[in-house]
Length: 151
Image (cartoon, rainbow, N blue to C red):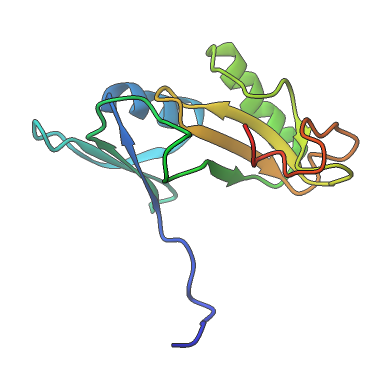
């Protein structure tokens, strides 16, 4: 098998405890469009994306909150192009009372130009919104390790 230029992430699926709550979070605070929703009891899910392209699937099948000490998803990172976009998301998330891991925009590592914000969704899933130059001049909260690695 050989690598090809077409191999890339298609979408991410997350297990959630309350689809309505998570749908509100991802749609209203992160501006995802609802592409399709399955409403059958015991089989609820939502397909989310942008411009009709599937990005994220929420599955209501978790019984407890995210556990960072178990194998599986470490965190989910979204990329935007500018620091202004990162700050716009930050403002909306702060206004909604979302739990942040670090205060403000932080660098991805010591001296890194890239950086972003780190926060949790309603089930405690660790999320990041970053931009290539958002970390310029910002502190890195974790010395000698990637900021997104140990939170």
